[in-house]
Image (cartoon, rainbow, N blue to C red; front, side):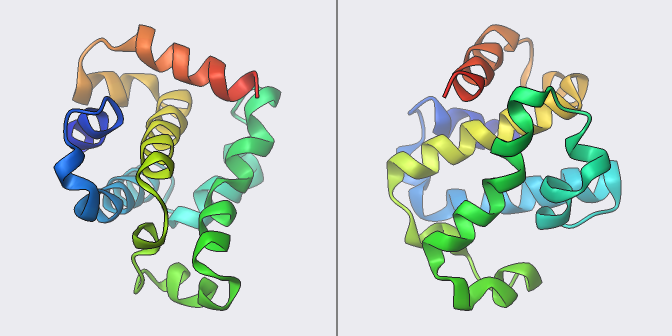
Length: 136
């Protein structure tokens, strides 16, 4: 599934646009549960986890899930937290590509070996995406 996210972010699987949000949610949920025993929102807002990131990334990733929640409307926050809503259905394809890159970067910055083990040595691409985040 992580490979599908990477392929989508590279423009190789645009036909997965409807499914990619659910795939991204499942991968991030599996990663956050396996690595930290936290849910998706909690892993991106937990101080101890966020503080593992370079200061230039902390605010960006702390706000990542809340930016996605706002796209779906704040009244849906509880549904999103419970996993009952695929909030990726309400964002554009460009935003989905950006989110795919963001999720891969987030996991890479927290555990680079985990991502490399699943995707191969794509460090150059991931480092480029991470630099783009830091330089925003």
